[in-house]
Amino acid sequence: MKVFLELGWFFKQEKKAYITGILLLLLVALLQLAPPKIIGIIADHIHEGTLTKGMLGKWMLLLVVTGLAMYILRYFWRIMIFGSSVKLSKILRNRLYHHFTNMSPSFYQKSRIGDLMAHATNDLSAIQQTAGVGVLTLVDSLSTGGFVIMAMAFTISWKLTLICLIPMPFMAMLTSWFGTMLHKSFYKAQEAFSSLNDKTQESITGIKVIKTFGQEKEDIEDFRKQSEDVVQKNILVAKIDSLYDPTISIIVAISFFLAIVFGAKYVLNNELTIGELISFTTYLGLLIWPMLAFGWLFNIVERGRASYDRVAALLREKVEISDEEGALDQMPHGDLQYQLNEFTYPGESQPVLKNIHFTLKRGNTLGIVGKTGAGKTTMLKLLIREFEGQQGDIRFGDKILSHYRLEKLREAIGYVPQDHFLFSATVAENIAFTNPSVPQGVVEHAAKLANIHEDILQFTEGYQTVVGERGVSLSGGQKQRISIARALLMNPEVLILDDSLSAVDAKTEEAILSSLKENRQGKTTIITSHRLSAIQHANLILVLEEGKIFERGTHDELMTLNGWYHEMFIRQQLEELVEHGGR
Image (tube, rainbow, N blue to C red; front, side):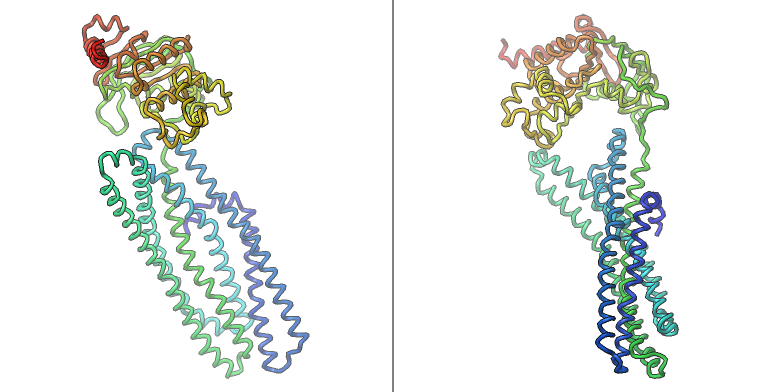
């Protein structure tokens, strides 16, 4: 029952609803005592030959009134208790989603998306069951069972009641043992479901790759094995769960046997009437539900506890990057200054950046080039505070990045990453993602700057075309340009294009860069690229090698050095010449 204590914060929050629901449940439990007693009284009058029509009508009317009262009370307690449990699911779901949005990339590197989805669906459903059906079962089993036992003991025979309760301690011991086994098994079953969920999400997302490499059979077989594992673990849960009802049924059968044997003896000794024995056995029948409910309660509680443990562990994960106390609630502007001595990714031993020192004046363009893995993207992620822990500082307008509120810092930066992501929405909604209320003209202006406007007009529904999940219906170049338009709509202080022109041709690239130069006067732009034509106009170009600045300067200055930049530029010019047939 530990999970009820852990959910104490919620029960306090919804105490009015739960107290009202529990009181109504208690009233229903009391009203349930009336029918067996009435049946016993009528049976005794029949046995004695004293039953009249008026008397029968009075008792029947009382039965009808009792039934209607229980009907109404059951309706309202369901609203109070089950309604509150839905609120718990909503609160935890919102907490999880808020927690997910605050977590840094390192969290998602070690967490599987399918597992996180299972937390937000299956686990929350089990916790909701605990706060709803679990509370109902606990209160109903204890109140109904308690009231019935008291009615049997105080209104009929306390001796017969004690005799019939002899098997009960055995039931308590067995159900407790089953509960411990169920908790362990259900936890493993939930973990298996999370793995299957992750496998499904990953396979559907990567279905093109799977088909391209002809790995459908292997992927299906892998899915089959994981699905079989889920089935086997849930079968184990079901096997343990199935022990409750037979165990309780045997205990109830023993109690009935004792009631009939000893009850008949008391009737023959005139210690009980026939009607009282009928009432007693009817009351004993009412005890079946509390006993079954008690076993069911262990099932629900153990499932809920296993799920709550998983969700609580997830919520305990610390947010690695957050606002420092007294952070500035203003958007930064000004020069960018990198004074980085070293940066190493969490959990790694080798630094990925070393001695990165430069200043980028406001309104200038910075180009960053280098081999794959040289540290270009890492530099940018430190600027938007996706990672922290570097030795040295990065300043934006003479203030260290952490001095600004994270929200304000990122509002000042329009970032177009390498792995551009589009939502399953319309083209217009994707471009206006940061400000959904902007007029259509503003959306189209951003699209024109990104040289995607004409393409969009050719789509089936124009700007209202739904792009599909992750932009599956678009080409790589179209997705890149829509991502650029989305960033441009922000009109950010700093625009970052992280190898975001790789999927467009040279002519389109030139058109986009010309638009940026004309429309971003006084605003800073940072471009990383493998194609040097994208950054040759930059005010400052950095060549990175193994996390260090290997060369720096303008295009003309770097060409005079005859180093890596010069060699790569000449090579790319020759490749372009060959592609155009030597012309």
